[in-house]
Image (cartoon, rainbow, N blue to C red; front, side, top):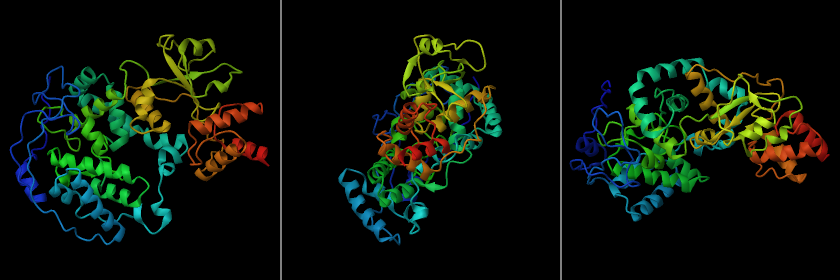
Length: 461
């Protein structure tokens, strides 16, 4: 096995921490820490053996003693932010967080327009506004599954072949799936975000809609710094606080970050093997099954009852008996006893998939079907199998977020429970629309399109 590149030589605890928070760091200890108090990770030599790191083994927790500035904070220019910060700092210290670390995390935060703009149209960004939900699925895939990513992904499999050998053997996660997530999250580590995790999470907390979540992530950031897993200056993130080459929230880092080369640090920011091992560990813990498909694009016979695309898993023997077959021909390669769900991402006239457990595992990374489909298509494409084969029905007008809300509200008023009126055409909306379509003898594919909305509005008038 070829020797892996070394991590950047930047873990000089005393100098870095003194400069940042007036810290005085003791020599890192080799005794493993306790899972949950520090980042999980494998322990091993700088050139890992063929067996690789052991999943779940904790990273060695440095015995770090901190002292330094504890306040007062420099005013942020936002009274709500300053009041929240004083209160949260007191609560964090009451929970046992080191006062110097609390100060280091919260000093220097400032309002971001994304969260605290006086312009409501700027500061009201929600889940429904994210590309995975707001864009037509074919438009989202056009930007997520690009030729550049497919080619670079194949190159990365070759470049990190030894690393991926270890990850597959250790964690049981397919290399192409890991590479696909790496591609989507940060374009293979080339862009890990230009936000500061502490600042963006503080803004999220002050904004208020996800305050409890944001404060929990800030506590996790404090633990990361307290344990010496990262320096305060290193905690760069994306707009929502996710960090590193595979975009981990701070609490996910504490639970799943892996130390691939056994140096006691899970450096998901600048050392790709650590980031890839961390993603593999997370996917494995989420139930990934090596050797099983994420999904298979299928053909259906004429007259097929699309009401079977109802979100329920059925045995492969059932799908075979109903006439479904792989669109590329040949056998499914999956046992009759395996379960799969029939999914119509763009209705009965678009591509159709049988989805397996690994698709749901992809969604633990980002709970959007379009995201999981992009991961699956990228993983297949990196190996040379491009998809989908069927053509997207771009001629059928899709709904805007506001129109989806109108559809949901009207279905609810008609007695079809679409769930919350949130502008996201999820499983509840699809099932409600399917039931409406079945009652009226329509094609019951549950696809939230302009013709479907017109039919629902006509029924309500």
